Length: 330
Image (cartoon, rainbow, N blue to C red):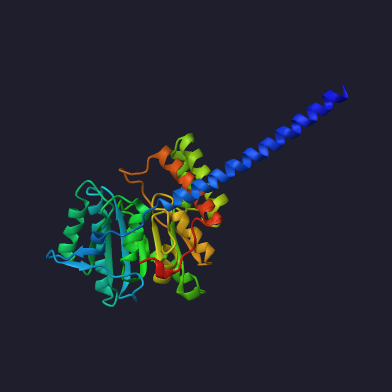
């Protein structure tokens, strides 16, 4: 009897011991994979991506984000296969920007359309605006290969001249005039360490209506993603994914210097980096409309983003990724 109890206790002890060993091995494998896969990310800028074409076809070099600003505003528009949706967004943006400049001649701007390795005529469509308004106002950065939205935004931001830098989606889902709202959000922050602050457009106020229109499965995915964002990376921001964010040049330089994620979850890493550096982030409600033609595939894109969130945390935690100095970005 006592022998049986002893053997049962011994078996339980063995089971716990082996489970702990397996858990440690699994953790070690995850850490190794996180480090190895982190090294696979190629962020080298191709030589062709360092130049843009003027209205008359002359090739000129993009400036650097490390240069002093020479304009008031840069608008970065990541675009992938957007030949159909881009004109609507660009017409609205250019109309607003031109009217604003007419009212206030000291207001200067540029729009950088980043063609993220499109297979359609996105570059040709964007170049029509360069020819119409000139390369001082509209520039097209054509990436040699598809990097993902985050990679496109980063390349455009590194090539910008503005004191303020706005990222805006090519689908025009956010009313462009709402830039005034995010500007007000930026100005509402009185304490700006080293002039660094970020103002995020937010659709959180529309969440109740969106839940009513979504399927139960998509609602589950949405709340699951929000939980992972909160648990692993960013707290205090209800909508990390709205593609309408305004940065001071200093904040853009600080955050994009360390950005690694090039696809859908890049917004989360940007805000994670901002919070690591104690950069103030304000969230501002903006108008938003669902536009047909989204590149986001509900299940697989959410799955990819969930994976990226876990990797973001683990890679910084294990030292696979580090917060870089600005000098290493160019």
